[in-house]
Image (cartoon, rainbow, N blue to C red):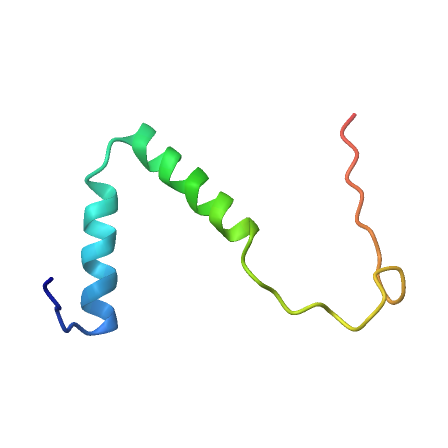
Length: 62
């Protein structure tokens, strides 16, 4: 196993370069995989009731 120590900027740059090297279809599939993983990401529930102090923006297209 190899451990590399990098700054956050260096790490992000390498990740971006590797991602952009993928074919556009592969990038899309990676995005879908990420969205699927984030679906199960733990979040803190709001203490405010969902119906209280909230509003709905409805955009109708004719």
